[in-house]
Image 1 (cartoon, helix red, strand yellow):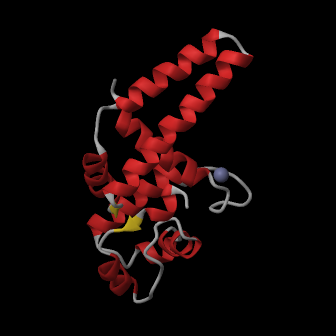
Image 2: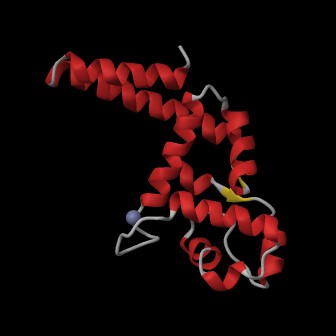
Length: 152
Ligand SMILES: [Zn+2]
């Protein structure tokens, strides 16, 4: 499962009751994206929640793909967002805290930790490949990216 399958809507029950409907807890589930990010629903949300939902839509759902919002851009951008927080030096617990503040989302810090480990391993693999295939420039680049992630 991708990390974006483990990102959940905070205050899910409260939101469902404001919208007078049910939707999946998972933030990136198709039904959630459809429901939360269509104009009709927004009017029923309290202003704090609405602001977070709008921020999320602006930051992650702003592409023009034909299959939007099922094109995968939102998931990709959200992973980027987590990696950027990590590069700023935040640990899994802090990352969970920040996504709550920013977008009213939550995840288990253990899931974030595995995602970060996975990302480092992917970079290591890419680094090793770059060394053999395309010379040292790309490898150095990847090595630096990995250092940002591991904070070493
Ligand atoms: Zn897209």
